[in-house]
Length: 237
Length: 290
Ligand SMILES: Nc1ncnc2c1ncn2[C@@H]1O[C@H](COP(=O)(O)OP(=O)(O)OP(=O)(O)O)[C@@H](O)[C@H]1O
Ligand SMILES: [Mg+2]
Image (cartoon, rainbow over all chains, first blue to last red; front, side):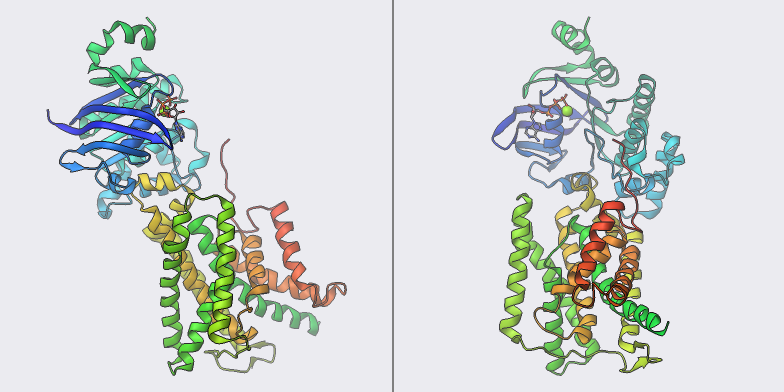
């Protein structure tokens, strides 16, 4: 498999404080990769650095294109959809307007209408809520909307920041099953950040372990699962 | 009864002024999520540009549309050159900039066109409608409605209009769906300046043209926008007429108010509505889960 995203020497900071200290990692095309790490390790910051939402330096290549210095909107237009921490839906707008906005950079009207129906087929509850203000959706519905809006971009790469956050276990299972389907059926590559390491490793084929801004372990999910340190600190057995 | 009807009609006529200005206020609010206190002075400046064009022999409607385009570009330029560099600055510096803009436009207009009061032509026939309301006011009423329809359609049915609202409400998420937020802000300033120009050109035949023409009126414009609901162009127009009517009736029937204290009516309305219905009488209630 070839690399979809290749990151070298990635630094990121908020004001004077450095958060990422030169990360090297790559994502395989069509794969699901996860970044694990404790609170404050820099997982969210890594996704933000890819999307150009924080001050960063280093090389970030999306296939042939260098996106390391691009503005967020332009990175999105390269096909990277980001489901941010806290979902980031447009709370005053309806569910369907949120989905429409997800396709803002596209011009194919017919394709957009088709994709809205596809999102509704993945998440039927959203269809029932199509005219409801997004700010009034339940946590689970809002998370589905956030994922659905990201899909409306027809992304090459989906960045997911703790999609399970605040959801009931049953909803989490359902959401991850759908994410897996999207990955397999539509070939959307994913970079997944999760607190729930067991869930993330089950879903992903590759994993990186981040500790205070440095990658300390990397490998296939299988090898990570068998790693003693990871087991003890992140899986709890 | 006759006096009452007359006061209502005068109120509607004044209301048309406030409604027109309130539309500009709503426009900028939708685009940048706060008020532009220099809006009145910008509109005044635009009106002078139109006056100069007409004085130079340009036909009224040509001057009207040239002014709209120039104002649009001017609004765009102000955002790019003055507002954008302040993007991350605290609120206080924004207020200082607004005060600065007010001073700059006011004194520049005074320097170029001096402070003598000028008449400004109306595109509508002179005379009145059954002796009750001037034909200019009637024409202005329709201009306001056309403007309202245009703004409503822009926000409701166009991609850019939706994107502009999204950019104002949640800039981070807007960028994440590919909206170039910086350009949306500039566009919002441009459109607000253009609408303000229309308001100025419609108001000037009534209040006459001078650098301070907008001083009191803008407050009514804000009152109209707040009473109607800052999130709703239709509400702002309704609010404009309501403020016009209430102001007139209060001035006539409450002796203590008279014509000197009319301006306080605007303030009282703002405060009352903000207290009891913060989203305005016609504004969309914003429901958020906490
Ligand atoms: N906006 C900000 N300004 C300053 N510091 C920040 C900001 N956001 C994050 N940080 C700091 O950067 C570090 C990494 O934060 P980040 O959000 O990337 O962690 P995380 O791995 O996603 O944590 P969590 O699992 O709790 O979401 C933390 O020390 C945090 O305090
Ligand atoms: Mg995080």
